Length: 372
Image (cartoon, rainbow, N blue to C red):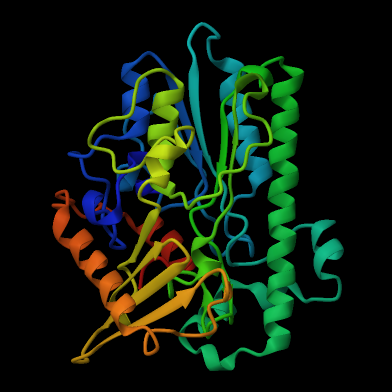
């Protein structure tokens, strides 16, 4: 989320560890919009994306709907509650100012417990207890416990959660239409990550950088139906969101931002490279990936082992990343590793401070696996 809202790669904004708060030295989209006269509000159901981690900067109105471990098996507050809280703010604000509203739903996330009728529609006969966080977390650390049937059942529960969020998002858009606000809206729907169900031997997220983790939805609705039906064919990144918003509202992309305006495809297409970094997983020092054209390299540096490992894939011929080509094309793999190394050396990371976490937040974060 730090990358989406700053337009910076993880190595630059530095907010990567489990206790890192957003650095004061990086420019932040809500702050930029607030300074330019926007009424800014956020409602989040994820304790990591909360004020304790610095994400309330620049928001005039910030609501964290805390997780409920021990009182609700779903733990996260649902998208229905999220959208109702957002609409409550919308109904009380002045209509004189333009507004920026950030909503963070956490339903498509362990525990996988879709409410009815979505459970019955997508996972009829599957015990929702299978998707409880403790069980899924155990699979994360002991992936060999998983079976193909378990993968099918968990994926079905996950699909039900996605469909529930989709329904609630549609309900919110209908409210905007009824209030005669929809045509003027810029709406961006994006995910922070995907989920893995044994695809590459792991479960949940935060373990690998394969496509089931990185290939997330990005849907943009422009005001008054502009560019309706346009599909961007080249690779884009989450860091493209903030500069796109700034250009669309007339403020202009900040020169420090590493992303590009999605509506200026030539800016991104001339490079057509995408980077990803995973730095919070204790098994690995870090995992990084680079996509350039049809090729993708995933590079692992492993704790307590004097070796590194890379995998090379052709995403067109092998979109499921089943055939490692690094031995067959060592020069190409080496070139992409050099691109990764260059990306590591190019950017000075921002100074980050640890978040101050009270006991209530600590329990919430532990309940969903964010803290050991």
